[in-house]
Image 1: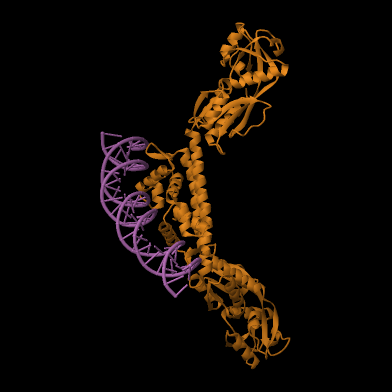
Image 2 (image 1 turned 30 degrees about the vertical axis):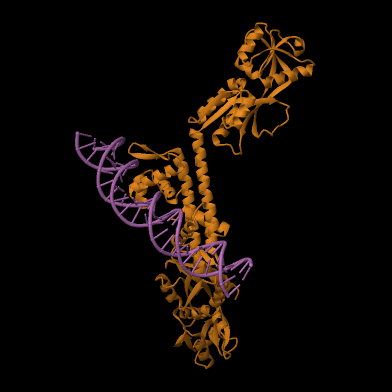
Length: 290
Length: 290
DNA sequence: CGCGATCCATAGATAGCATTGATGGATGTT
DNA sequence: AACATCCATCAATGCTATCTATGGATCGCG
């Protein structure tokens, strides 16, 4: 039975046309490579290399076996990769950060599906605003960030994140009046959320022609609804948040022209590890069934 | 880098579902196989087998890798086989026996072609009658027998030889008269050749209604033509013999209804070694271009 | 042409791996 | 409960892998 190391060495010598260069590339000493070739010749009973001047050249048989060797080594590497991927799905861990509205709706659904398909797969969850999530992603603290941005925003790849579309969401005006609209609240006290929520709010009000007066801040969907119901102000919330929690004393009116794209972001070169890919899949599927 | 022996062992354990049985089949001791599995688990970092009762079972990862392992080992075997075949064609030796008419015509042409295509291939040639050739073939003294039989003979595979059609040849009446025929020689002195030639002669005369009187014997195409030219009798010769040697004092008249099939025979299970296959090819090609 | 650089093969030393027989622990069958 | 079967582990021994050192051959340059 031949040896994979021998075959790998032969393929490298064939590729570089030099024992010394192959040794360098494989992090072996030159005599080691020489020895491997000798043992492969002994194992096959065939002369595979011949001296030519100071160097060597492969015999026709050597070329033939080197080609096959490269294939075989490639197969072995593919098998190792496949095995690692398989393990990743059975016992891997994925760290996911998402904002509260997604974390309360999409993520539980995705988590349930992942638990069924890959029982050994661990999911670590973090409640984070989109900008925090992006920072953590780039710092290697998480593997996936579930976030949102205006639906019509320019595809901005400069931050190095790779994004996968997960779904969409509407933004709602939250007040005590049914069938309300932004225009009715030019002078109202507004309750602002996270930075990206504020940007959304300013853009929506700007489209109606005014700048909202932010009187208080909270990014907790329960808190802001309670404040609205108590008459402390008005705010906006995404549909996902309303799915997760709906105070009986507030009304929601969809703001036309303000929609969010929900996306999942990863960092680093593709392909994603199988476990990460499985999470991305689960998130998209979950969002599609809400 | 994984080891081919380890992979082969895993594949065998997977196939037999037992460490002890795999060991038996691979001619290893059981602890050796156990050790190989342990080292493969260490190399991959993945648990591949688990104890179940008295025996073992492969994990899903183990099954996955065992399947890939079987492929890879198959690839390596194929590469070894291919390499051996390549060597065979470059430096192999083939022993060929043929009757004189074929040895003088088809074989030189085939030999020339083989020398061009496979310069290192050696050909050993033996001048033998068909029955001798068949015996040598079965005894392993030669690799290929080039022989003939009546064209309409029953395909007789009982002798264990494998036959490949090479070509056909006509039989000619050799006498001193132009446009002669068998019927003119009911009472002539005939010169007989080898046993199979005699059988051919008797069959041909039998079809015209007489039994030829054999007055002398020689299977040398030069000798029999010289005897005919000297008036010592008449004989038959195949077209191939006449291509190789033609005495100016004799005439040849084709005997209608008497044709030979020329075939090349080998012995043993297919596939033929590459060198033998190359010789068979060369013989067929040579016969086709005569 | 002489010298130094380059390249590969071989030798010897050492560590790691492969294989065996022996043994122990767990499981299954009677 | 006793015995058979199966696998894992241990210890001893031989084989392989890898290195540094060395030698021989070739190449390129002054």
